[in-house]
Image (cartoon, rainbow, N blue to C red; front, side):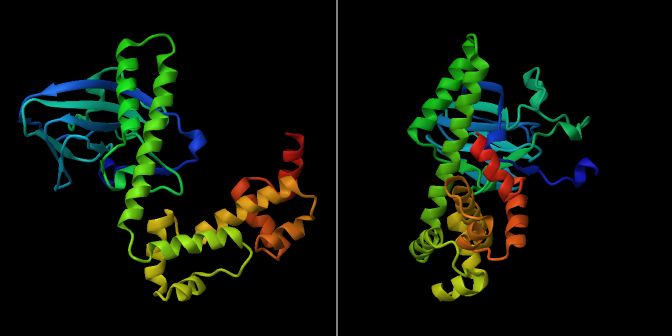
Amino acid sequence: MQENEIVHPVKKETPFREWSPGIHYAQFQSLQPCSFPERRLYDFELLYVRQGELTTRINGALHSLTPGQLIFLAPGVYHQNSILSSPAKLLGIHFDFFGESRILREEDMVVNEEEVIPGKFAVEAVAAPFLPLSEDPIYTPPPECVHAMEQLVQEFTMRPPGYELVCRGLMLGILTSLLRTQSSRRLAKASVHGERIRALMEEIEAKPAAGWTNRSMADRMNLHEDHFSKLFRQIAGMPPGEYLRSIRHREARKLLRETDWPVEKVGEQVGYPDIHYFSRTFSAQEGISPRAYRKLSRIL
C-alpha cells in the first residue's frame, strides 16, 4: 500500500497491558506570536497551553486553545500551529504507544515531505471501552494530569538513573487521565436518555443471562434500534452487543475461577445455554477453552 493510500492515524486494537509508551521529547516552551509551517509528525504530540492562546488547523478545521487546554496531534495528520499572544507558554510531549519509534533527534519527529518514510508513522493504540484519543483532539486535563506532565518534563530533562521507567509510568497515567476525561465528556454530551441507558447497563451487569438483543433493549428505551445503538456507544464506548459479550465473559471467568459448576452450567448462567457456542465464544475472547482457563486459574 502506498503512503498516500493510508488513512492516518493508523489505529490498532491493543489491550492496555501491551501499552508501553516511548518518550521522544518533553519540554517547556516560551514562544512569541507566529505561524508555523504546515507539517506532519511521525509520532504523537501532546501540546498543552500553560499561558497565552494557540490555534491549530487540522485538515482544514480550526481549533482554538486557551490556558488549561491541550491538543492531541496524531502521526501523518497535516496541521498548522499559530501562536496568537505574547508570550505563549507551552508544554510539549512527543511519544508513541509501543516504544516502537526510533527518534534520535528532534528533526526525526517531523516528516520531510520530499522523503516520506511510510513505515515510520507511529500507530495509535485503542482499547475498549474508550474511543481513540485522536477522535476529538481537544482536552482539558485535570490538575493531576497536568502535574504528571510537568513531572515528565522534569524527568526527561534531568535524566536521572531510571528516568525512562519513570517517564513511561507517568505517560501511562497521562493517557489514562485523558481517556477518562474523554469518557466524562462523552457522558456530559449524552442525550436525556443517558441516565436510562446507564441504568440499563447496570441491569445487564446484574442479569447477563437474560435474553438481551438490540431490538429488545431499544424497545425498552422506546427508541429506534439504530438511534439506540448510537446513544449506547456514546455512553459505553462500545456497541450494545459488544458490551453484553464483555459482561458475560467477565462473569464466566469469575464463575470458572470461584465455583466447581460444570462448564455447561457456567455457560447457562451467563446466557449461553449451548455449550459448544459458549466454548467457541469464550475461547475467542480468552485464547483458551473454559476448561483450560479453569485449570490454569487453579494452578495460579
